[in-house]
Length: 120
Image 1 (cartoon, one colour):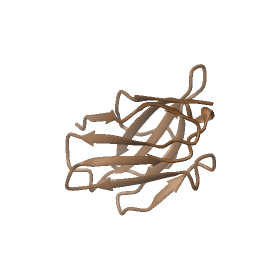
Image 2 (image 1 turned 45 degrees about the vertical axis):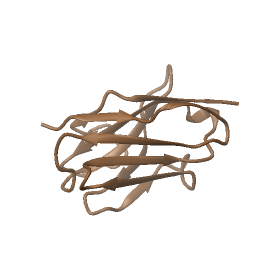
Image 3 (image 1 turned 90 degrees about the vertical axis):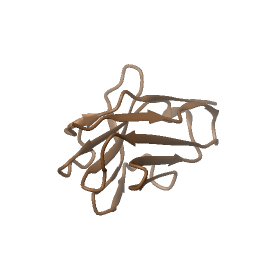
Image 4 (image 1 turned 90 degrees about the horizontal axis):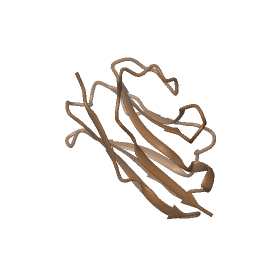
């Protein structure tokens, strides 16, 4: 059983930056992990993934602005978000699974989320 706890959300103006963290309760080296977001009234969508071997993949909407990384020793996943725009507003979740799930919602383990609000 893995527990995930997100942190680092907040309110920023358009063009600003935030770094989200996702702290895991167990070793993450063998897991595929992802970042997802959900805006009010919208479905949850995939933002970025990082494979167990380190390859990253991004949704088109965030390519060039967001970067996912991990520190295995700290059991932590990160999401660096630059040039934030109002449409990036939402609850951000991290997720983990032993198998590749790409940007689908089929991950086994989920955190409770951290809120990101971007004002224009």
